[in-house]
Structure formats: structure tokens, C-alpha cells
Length: 309
Image 1 (tube, rainbow, N blue to C red):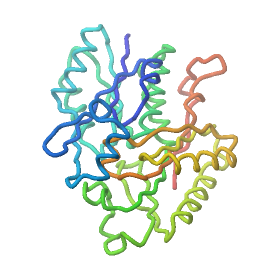
Image 2: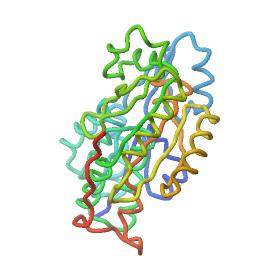
Image 3: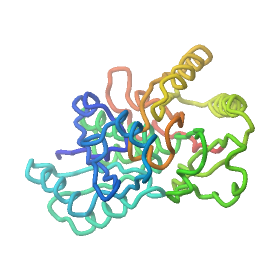
Image 4: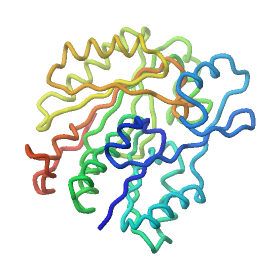
């Protein structure tokens, strides 16, 4: 058995993470002024937000086509892979997962295992990294898919945006109607229903950014208390390093028991949330799926309770 791992660019994995864990990335298209860009290929992180700040026409996103996905599948077949795990951005945000399912139903040369992360950015990255690490250690496909589902069950997210206009414009806010008339007077706290449809919704309204920040930290404190597994947290931003640094320093001081990392909100996701968005995703620490010798734990020893906000 030879297993490959493929994800899309909205995970925002670094080239080093991909190289170290045998992960390939298919870029998501961005359409802007009738020109097609490819996420983090011919439009980068800072370049995107600089362009967004002055653009009179705003971008939209698509999903990798069936033909584009098939080219990646063909490359794995040619390299002798028997199985391919494809970790996708949430099906609640994109049609990519459905395209992968379509190919999986007809492809006979290789076994395709679609995994809907039900999230994006760092949460999706964690799933791809866990899959890659398990493959490197020789885990079989059943254990890998089991652990990916378990990781998803422990994943939660909070984020704040400067305003909801981008999410409303692109149709990615599931409860947008409830915020009509109040967009400029609140700091919304948003989340995703990772254990359901993987859609974005505003879960709370605060008048001030600091109050929203405090509420998110209260939620995090409550939700990680007494968990039977170690937690990892990633704080990530839409080209606002000052906010990210402030969050990182505060959380590192207050939660020394939590492994804390940083990442970005790149062009595809930034199209929907806008600049200055700041977010945090947490889950079971992916290192806890391995024993002290670095070997994968059996499925019988991995069963995390599902997150319930």
C-alpha cells in the first residue's frame, strides 16, 4: 500500500510543512477583473491584501475543476500510489469536496479517500498534517481516516471580522439576515459548525472589539477545561500582524499548557472575510495520536468526545 495526501491551498501550509509530511497542494482559483489567479501561486499573501484595499472591483472564488483534480490524481497513479487521501476545505464553503467525490466514484486505478475537513485554514492544515504524519509512520488507511474524523470532532473556531460585508457579499454567512441594519455598529464573533455542515455563522454580537476578544477567551477557557486530551491552538490573521502578535502573547502567557502556533488567512479565505480578520482554531494536539516512541496509537485508544459549544 502506498498512500498519498493531497489538500487545497486554503489550508495555507508552508512549503516546509508539505515537504516534511509528503503533502501536495492544489491551488484554488480566484477570479478578479476577469483574470484568474491561483491562491499563493501567482497572487501572494501581502500582495492580495494590498490589492484588495484599493480595488474598485472585488474578487470571487471558485473551486478546482474536475479536470484539474484529475491531473493530480493521474500524477499519483503514475507514481505507483494505491490510495490517495484528499483533505478539502469545508463543503459548507466550497464545491471542491463534491468534485472530489465525483472523481472518487469513477476512478478505478487508485482508491480515493475524500475527507471533508468542515473547516479551512489551520483546521484543515491540521488534518492534512495528521494524515501525512500517519502515512510516514506506516499507518493503514482505516486508522488514518478514523483519526481524521476524531480530530475533526475536537475542532472548534472563533474569529472576528472588521465588518460582515465580505461574508454577506460572497454568501458565506449562513445567518446574514439577522444582522441587517447593524453591520456597522457591532463586532461579530463568528464560528463554524465543524461537526455539522461546516458553515460560518455569527454566534454573538459585541459592541467593542475588546469585548469580543474577552468573550472569545472566555469561551476557549470553558471549552478546553477538563478535556481528556492535550490541546493545540493556532492563531492566524488576514494581514494584521499587530493583532496576531497581541493575541499570541496573551494566550501564551495565560495558557502555558496549550501548544500555540501561528498561520495566515490567505487570498482565497481573505476574499470572504476581508483584511484585519483575526481567528483561532483549536483541536486535539495531533502529536497525541502517537505514542512516546512516535508510533501511531491503535484506534481503540483514540476516542475523543465531540465538541459541543
